[in-house]
Length: 379
Length: 260
Image (cartoon, rainbow over all chains, first blue to last red):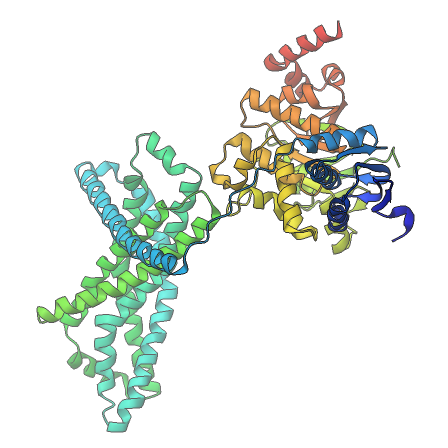
């Protein structure tokens, strides 16, 4: 560092500490100046008088001004009375501005006991789970009330909104649902044929495909796809409406957000899921048949006649009965989570993740409950 | 050096699709002045501001900010330039997942290598400069009122001691008292920090109280440029309606009294 641009040099004479500042006291040099200032503050020692000469300073900004202010504050609290000389009027205003800065110490957060905090996290997790169930029950109830109210005055139902949602949730989802379920059906058939071949029981692979697809896999895959595709978009839509106070605006105009925004969406999901499940199951059976023909060497006639023997209308009904309930679960979770969004972008992301995770979880739990139910009534 | 404008716009054309918003616009901003840009809503004020700071592409023309032409600048020159200006967006554009303190520290953390202690102190100093207290530092943007949001956004824009600040409708959405305070704040900071201020505004009071020069934007170009008196003498129909209309008229009277 050249001597003429030295940021801060100190001279100690007859109990007087004299400092000379120079160069650029600006943000890019703040780190160097801070180190020098801290050293100068410690240098005070036995000095009775302190002065700092700012004549050499070429550039001066708020960073420089604050560091100078910090230095003089430290000296003052050590009992000295520092003098700042050679400062242009303009920089002096800046320094004066800084002298008002109040550094109220912020209380450091108390370090909690790790065992206690782990227990607290566990407890609040359990309580959160209970609270979630409460929120969902609450939403289900609100939707029920809105549905009854709309039944009494059918003209108030938002048909336009519902048709628009139906287009997005059902019609536009058809290609991807068909593709995924087709592939799943094909994979199940291939695995079935491959493993049953060892016992010479390839024909049973058709039973496997038929029963598994119609009862369980078709509806589950579709529900999981819809939860990821439409559930997340419901949460994000309602969440950003919460952030922009659109939901509050609706409420103040005398509209019930549940009736205007949520009921059409949930109703559409209840309609869309059986439709998509039916299409998906057919695509999966088709995929299974194609693999049985090309990979297993089973002609389509044999596949179809075997399928007729293996499956009954009961299997189909079991799958289709579950679909609307899964639609309801996805809709309730997605809308309830959407209304929990707070002001920040982070909260929108958190709530959307929670919506997808919770709705997939609940869909699988519901599927298990249905399995118990159907077993006990002998279907 | 002193005469060289800090922002120089020449023959700028900007549009969307087949619609031209700015039509061969030229404008110079002088060092250390507060320039107020007026124009009707949707007339291209925000487009002009966003084009200057490089958020919108231009069709034709040349923009130089602090002697750097953004089109020919390397990535490094661009970043260096972006450190020398601060922008206050209309809605504040605070990062909603960071506290006020972290919002103000964000540019410092990314651009300077300074200690956490100095960064904390500087954040409080900047907040103090815009009239906020340490109590506000740990709040989240969602907990702030409109006026406080603007103040925090200004503190963030000033975090690196920029030479130019761009303000997009700084007083919109504030009550007249808060707007007046904000105007005074901008004036004070401009005096203390030697800022050049480029300000889009609708607020006649702001124009009158703080602006050194006013640029009137109409039909995609600057139709009048100068002091309040120049605006009042301008013959362009939109400028006349704006400054001589019901609300402008009251100001005109006051200026008249002032001149007397």
